[in-house]
Length: 242
Image (cartoon, rainbow, N blue to C red; front, side):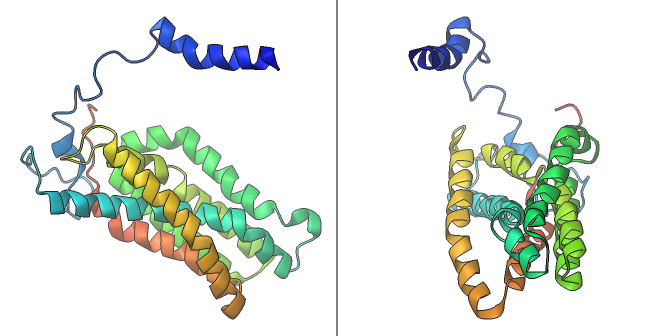
């Protein structure tokens, strides 16, 4: 036990003592970031002129709220897979040993998406990733709803996993770049909003599912995709040099 504690302490403190952390203050190299991240244009590749260095607080709060909603919505498909897909598959007649395949299908394509996500973001931009990712989530959950079968649920989960693979990291990055906030504050607020939504949503979905059926869980995931499709314009594509 003592050996484990020593190893964990070395792993935690070692990089700090060795100077492995990035040098400089967190606020450095952020001056040009604030005007490059957010925009309300509907064109993926449109580059509006530089904004002023400060935003009114209500605008900052609104942008942060939308990013928080977008981040929470990006987690809806994962919530469906983790909490509801096994019940759905069991209700649809899957064998006891197969009811966990919904989560496997979604997380399998998520893993692939995370591995290639940086290259995709560099190629098409963050707004396009969120927009098309939301379209994939919407398609996947619609397939699961319409087919209402074991194969349909598995296919839908796989498609949805590809759509939400890099959405949460993208929204975290955007939250940390919200203009008018100290470094790290936007990320903290958005992550807490997303986690709070993840805490409150399952009981609500469960209550509705008891009254109307487990299709409500898929509708919940579909709602996440629609929010992604709707809210992507708040993000602005970063320049290729960044």
